[in-house]
Image (tube, rainbow, N blue to C red; front, side, top):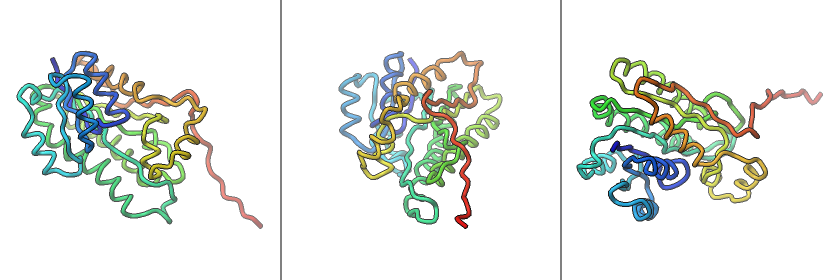
Length: 250
C-alpha cells in the first residue's frame, strides 16, 4: 500500500483528495490547522488509513515535529500533494493590504518549497511523485488577482524546474491548474462573505473538489513511465476573458 502526504486536508480539494485516495487503496497523512476536521476524517476513514498532522504549513518547526512523530507505517511517503494555499482579498494592487500579500507568499510559495525540499530525499528513494496544485490564475491574469496569480505562476514554474532537476530519478512532477472550483476558497478570500460566494458560483455549474481529487488520483496512479507535466482544467461554463480597455472620457 502506498502513502500520500496531503496538505490543506481540512476542506475542499485536500479533504476530497484524502477520501479519493483512501478509496483507491492509499494511506494518507492528512495535514492542516483544524484538528477537529482531521479527527473527523480519521474517524470516517480509519486510523489505519489516515494519520492527522495538525500544523500550519508556514510553521516549519511544527511541521518537522509532525513528520518526526509519524507512525512507522506512514513514514514511507510515495506521493506529496502540495494543496495547501489561499487567496486573500480582491482589491487592485494599489489598494491591497501588504499583510495579505505576504501571507499568500508565505503559504503558497515559501511553505510549499520548504516542505518539498524536506521530503525530496524520501521521494527520490521511493521513486515517488509530487503533485502541486496551482491555478489557471498562473496563466490568465484578472483584476485583483495580483499576488495570488503570481504565487500560482511560481508553483507552475517551480514544478517545471523541479521536473527538470529530478530527471533520471524516476520522480514524477505535475502541476494541476484548476479554474473555478466551488469550495471554501471564496469565503476565505473575502473574509467569510457568503453573498460573494453565492454570487460567484450561482448558476455557473463550477467544478467540485471531488472532480479535482479524482484528477489527482488519476495522475498519481498512472504507470511510472508517464509524467503529466501540467494539467489545466475549467468547468465548461468558464472560459478566457477579453482584454480590458481604458477609454479616455474626453
